[in-house]
Image (tube, rainbow, N blue to C red; front, side, top):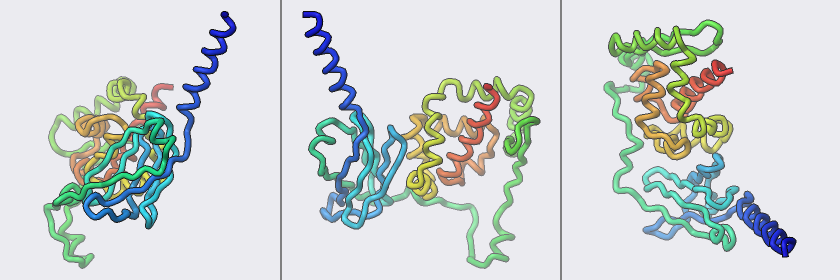
Length: 253
């Protein structure tokens, strides 16, 4: 009797393990209002941290496992988030529809200055970021952008330099699990391409499971200026967070 129960348990474990195996998943993305296939839609696996784009027929292939989360993004359309189930993987040939937004305001950045298109003129009109970077002894190529908003920024910079281990530990110790995804994000071409065109931090919050407020706190804690935080695209923000997190890992050793 015992060996029968053991056999049943073994087969159950194999079954569960098989359900979590990574497989290639194929589907199509269409415009909800027209029914036409959508080309160049970004499809991200938030759980495994890699991405792809749809072809001219709206079709894509991506590696998934049960319980992963797929995220669809296309300029002018509402992002779509889908939980991957065993049935979805098993039957395949799924169709996802994206809903068009009335106004895609999230991609518009208002600048406090006008550009004419003439380099000599624009170079004089664009304000220069005067924030200074302070390096930490023993940590090459890494430093802090102090900013210039108020004396608190300066005092915070010196606290960070005097006690970088405690300073960075307070920033990252509660978010290590999420931030381990940073390396994968930096290595995936499609994710980087998507982030370079985004300014709303939405993809970063979805993959890292941290809020926009937490992103701001991390960057301010590492003394990146408000100008940098507000005007940088999501790829630049990713690199900034990665730089600060890499420093934290070095100091932990």
